[in-house]
Length: 493
Image (cartoon, rainbow, N blue to C red; front, side, top):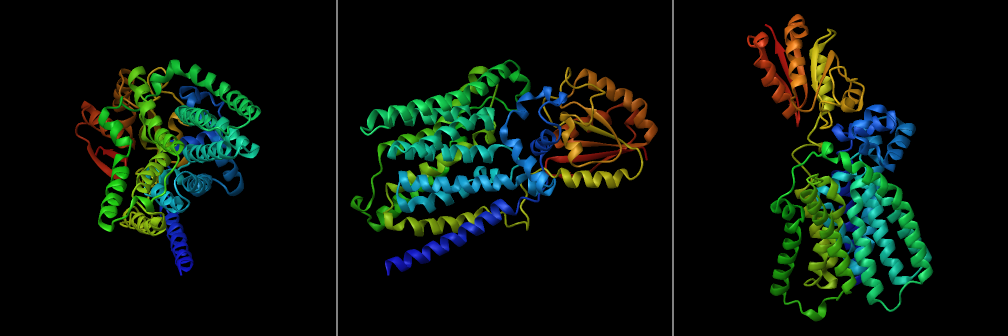
C-alpha cells in the first residue's frame, strides 16, 4: 500500500513539474526581447571584434554566444530559438539540484527542492532569457554535484566533471567569480574533516585544470577593472538591499510552517533524518557568499555590481537552505506530499494567470517598433532615439555615431522606419546643443517627429524638446506605453 501511494505521488509530482515548466519557462519564450537580449543578437551577428563593442568590451566576454549562434543557424533568428538553450540548461540545473538534495538532505527531498527553485522568479527568469545566466546556473550546479560526489566517492569521473565545470564557470560570465569561494570553503572543510580523502594525484590534477582555465579569464577581468566605473548601472547597495537579496522570506516561511506543523502533529525528533555538517557548510556558502561578496565589493570599490540577475546563481542555495531548515521538522515520509502542496502553490501563485501568454520582461520593443513603423508610414519622419545603454556617454557617443552600432543594437533587431537621430543615454551639453540644432532645422521642416526608447530616457527628452522655443506650440502625446518602453510623438498641428 505504501509503495502504491508513493507511485501515485510520483505521477502527480511529474504532472505538476511539466505544468510548471510549461507555464513558467515555455510560455514566456515568444515574448519580445529586452535590451540585453538584443545585445546578444548583436554579438552573435557582429562578433566580439566589432569596433563599436569597445564601448562595453565585457559584453562579448562569454562562451555563451556559441549557443544562440547555433540555434539561429539551425532554425533562424527568433525569440524562441535564442532562448531554447536556456530552457535546456535550466532543465539540467534542476536535475542536478534534485540530485544534490537527495545526497545532502534526504532522498525524498529532491522534489521539494525542485519546486522551491520553481517558486523563485530569479530561477524561472533564466529559462526564458537569451543571456548567459542559465548556462552559468547549469555549470555551477554540475560543478557542485561533481565536487560533492568526488569528495564522497573519490572517483575520477566525478573529479573531472567538477574540474571541467569549475574551470568553465568564469568563462560564462565575468561576474561569476565569487562562486569559486563555495568550492574552496566546502573543499577545504571536507578535506580537513573527512578521513577518506581523495587521492593526492586527483587533487593536483583538479587544481591544475581549474587554475589553468581561470588564469586567462582572471587576467582579462583585471584588465577591465580600470574602466569598470563607466559600466555601472546600479547604485551601491544598502543593508536593506542585502537582506532583500538573501531571500529570507522563503527560508523563514519554510521554517515557520514546518515548525508549527511539527508542534501540531507531534512529530518527534526520532522521525527526522540527520544530515552531515558538510551539507550545512555547502548550503550556507551557496546561499550567502555571492550576495555578501558583491555587497562588499560594490561598497568598497564604488563600482557597484548590485544587479539582481548577477546573483541569480545563488538562488539554488536559497532553495537548498529552505529544504535544510524544513528537514529539521519534517519526517522523511512526508517530503513528497509536501512537495505536491508546494508545486500546486507555485503553479497557482506564480503562473501570472491574468494573461494568456506571460511576458519574459516588461519591455515590449517588438510591439513598440511595429507601432512606430505604422505611425511613420512611408515618410522620412525624424525619430529621436536615446540609447538604452549607459555606455552611450560623451566621448563614446557622438552625433554621427552609427545607428547600426552596439549602442543602438535594439534598432537592428526590431527595425523601425523614419530618419533616426541617435541620442546618448543621459543628457549632456553636446546632446543639448545638437537637440537645439535639430529643433531649429530638421524637426521644424518635417512638421512632426517621435522620441523612441526606454521610458525614463523618453520622458526626459520629451520635456526637454517641449521646452524649446521652436516647439512650444506643438502638440505632443504618448503614442503608447510598452512596459518600460515608450513612444512620444510631436506634431506642429
